[in-house]
Image 1 (spheres, rainbow, N blue to C red):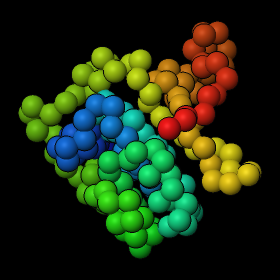
Image 2: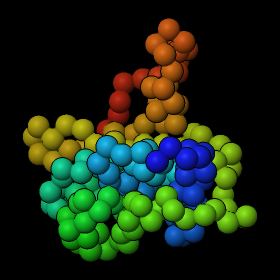
Image 3: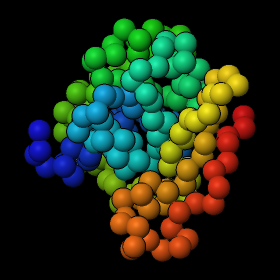
Length: 171
């Protein structure tokens, strides 16, 4: 549904914040290609948390690895991957909420607003996973300007808007 996109993102941010997620925590939205997945992604960022985006085709073993390695505190999963998501969240010991439920929460008056997350602009926005040629994928740290730069047309990007070469996370 189209609706108020900003309102859906604010609802997602309110649900994440209301679930005890603090700025800097890692939240893992897992969705098929749906508008609710985008709302969850930006809602997590608006709450000041870090996104570790998941591939809905991951096995329970792969999903559990990424959740554990990223230090995720919450899994937000699409109903279509419910069994794998439930098994993985249980294996890692974190709560799992449904993607549709996340976007349906009405923000409280005192909910953290997207503008409040600006103070965390130097933090890591996205902990993406890549590679895996020699084993399980490694985390790649992306600052907030990286996902935003991807939204700009190439001819309008500032030369420093993108990040230097990616660096893998080391725990």
